[in-house]
Every structure is written in structure tokens, then in C-alpha cells.
Length: 230
Image (cartoon, rainbow, N blue to C red; front, top):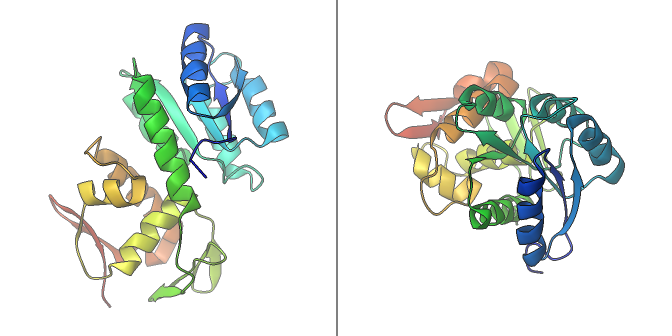
């Protein structure tokens, strides 16, 4: 099935012209759209409707988008919903915090509607995944793709779909250095370099969740990352 067909996207955006532009282009791409004009109502809609995807502006009335993102990603019922954040160019720190909270990606305003559609499709495509069922292990880290579970020293670690795919990719290529731009292509689904700092932010968050096993992911200065062979 074509990515987009029948998928429901919730747009949480207080600027009506931006919401209308997104709605028009996403409907053309085959998505079903619902909207909310403030953070509080957007959070409630996300909880009630469980959309397939959320486009979330970070500067919202009643409740900031960062708080909406944090709440949704800390709730097991909504953690799996991918979130694309909309930010102004001056809000770099908010973008970083949003990624730390579990946001999957961001687009800065003003944006190209076509770019937004392509990014959403890439995120949904990687979420569908086609993951191999074979379990992978590296030291105390174990991945069970069939169950979409990760454990460290036998204790389950809750990862977002993007963190899971990033870790699985590094484990599948254990010992081989992975350049940031290649990870952007293979994990994020982007064919050109968008912003390699996105990779650094997600690796940092992944290491934090892995706890004592975090040093399994090595930084290769000026190039990228690899998973230790031993």
C-alpha cells in the first residue's frame, strides 16, 4: 500500500494559514487530516484519536509543543506515534530538546510543503520497517526485532521506533564505522544530508537510555559512529 493511503495525521498548529497549507498538501498525498489550534486540545486529540502521525508546532498557546511532545512520548499508549516538529529558525535549542524528548524529526519555518510530505513518508516507511526477526546481541544489549524489544542486562529498555532502528543498524554493522550522512540515509530515509546534528542528538539520547552499556557505541571523531566489536 502506498505510504499515505488512509493514514490519519494530526496537525497541532495555531497559525491557520500554516495548518491550511499542510492540510491541503497532505490530503493531496492521500492522508486523512485532523487539526488542533493549541497544545492542550492537541494533546487531548492525540490521546483520544491515536493518530498515525503528528505534526507539532513548538510555539503553541495553552501548552507548548515541547510539553506536548514530552507527555506523549512518556506515555506507553502514545509513545509509538511519530512526531514531526515545526520550529522557527531561532528555536534551535527547542529543536534539540524536542529530539531529546523523543520527537522523530523537525522542519524549520518557512518550509516547503513537498519536503514535509517527503519527510513524513520517510518516517512512516522506516516505522513499517521490514525488520528481520533474528535476535541481535552485543555484550549486555539484546534486540528482539520480532517483538520490537531491547534489553540491557536482562532489563527492558523503552526506545522510540527511530532509536530502535538506529541501534539495530549499528548492531547489524558491528565494528564498522557508520558515517553520519549514511545513517541519515539508512535510518532516517533521507537521500541527501539534511542536518547531521540530528544523528548526534539521537545517539546521545540512545546512549542515555542504554545506561551502563552506553559505551558500546563509539564516536569516531569527524566521521560518525560504530558499535564495539567486543
